[in-house]
Image (cartoon, rainbow, N blue to C red; front, top):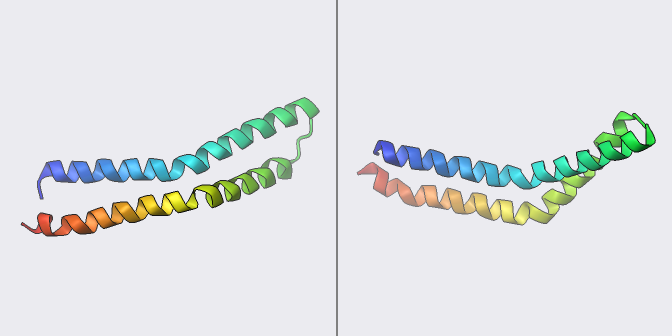
Length: 89
């Protein structure tokens, strides 16, 4: 295994990690921003008002993108397993 292969595997792992985290992080960011605007406009400072809607948004986002995320993870893992014979040389 050459250093270039190790760097490429690390780069691919980071890309997969970012792609897996992006839908959930972006949806939580948007929900938090909208809830923050609502709280600032109405001056309601209840902690559950920010937590429960974000949790619901995350569940919905996971339901909508879960299949794609699982497929991405399976493809990456399959790729790693297919590279094993080339690494042994």
